Structure formats: structure tokens, C-alpha cells
Image (cartoon, rainbow, N blue to C red; front, side, top):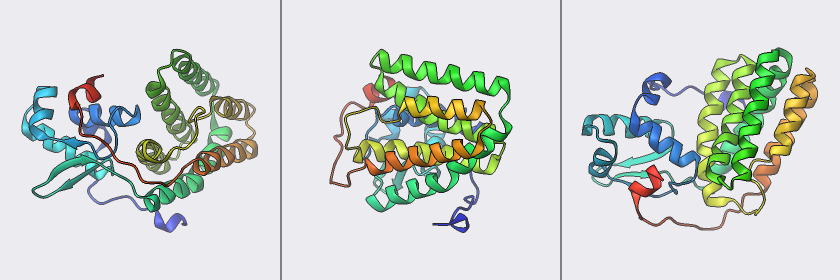
Length: 237
């Protein structure tokens, strides 16, 4: 995969608009925290009741989630949380391995004292979640850490790609993760922050690349499936 394969999708919904949609925000967060497994059915009527919004808002939220590759909508069959294939998973991580070393490099060049302090607070919050055994929250924070590095890099187009790829990675990890240890290594995050604080762009780039390759190598592409269980509990739990 090369940079020519990475294109902005047509008619992409504005990020501010999607995050103001409670269905988009709630489902996306539940996916990041792995409370909502791949394949889970998302019935419009149930989402309307859960969030107390109209069907118009539910449909807009589902369409935005579909555009972000987090939900699959099929005519006459409704919406389900997406189930990425092994090939999807490989493509997502190949894209991350291409983009994120570059954003780490640029973040190390451009980070301010305030940026570094923010990353350290974020990492501490992630470690606190792990200590409290709030693994879903820790996973979401781990993904958000990667998005923050992309933000600091100042490359807005790449930041948008990273944000989408991190969300899709949560589904991939739900299906294919094969290790017992922490899914996004907080020690690696700490080393990344140290490299960024020293403005060591080459080291930050190398650490990010090896970190993503390590996650990719932990994926096991065996078969898996999701149960249609309590949607309300998964979204609001």
C-alpha cells in the first residue's frame, strides 16, 4: 500500500456534525471500548428508544457510522456493527504503519511544552484505567493517544485518516486479538512521549513503527462471531 491508496472519501460528514449526533457518538464510543462487538444488530427502533431521539437522527448517525466503516447498512436488513475481514484488518494496519510513523516524526519536531504535558496527562489517565481494570476505557484512551500525536503533527489530512483507522482498529482487535497482555502498550506510549519531549524525530518514528508492527503481529485471523445480546446494556454500560 502506498500514499496513492489513501484518499478522502466523497461527501464525508463533517466531524463536528457527527460528534453532535448522540447515536454516532454513543455507538463509536462503545466500539472503542469494545462494549459493542462486531456483527451486533443496531435496530433503529431500539436506538430511538435508547437515545430518546427521532428516527431521522438515528438514521443520520448510522449513515455517518457507515461512512466511517464502523457500521454496515444493507437494504431491508438494517444496520450492524461492521465485521472486518482479515484482508480489511491487514489493510488498516498497513495504512497505520505507513502514516503514523510520519505523524510521530512530525509531532517530535513540532510539539510544544503544553503538547507534551497533555500527552503525559493522557498517558497517566490510560494507566489509571488499567489499574482500575477498566480495560475498555483504557483501550479507548490508547487509541485516542495515537490521534493526539497525529493532531500535534499539524497534518490535518493525516489526522483524519488516523482517527478513522484507530476506530476501525477497535473492531479488528475485538475479532482478532490473540494476546493476554495489554493491547496498546503503555510503556511504548511512555517511550514515545520521551522521544517527542526530546524532539528526537527519528526515534519517535522508529518507536511508532515498531509499536504498530507489534500490535499487527498479535492478530490471529481465526473465525469469530458476535451474539445479539442486550444492545442497551452494551451502549450504556
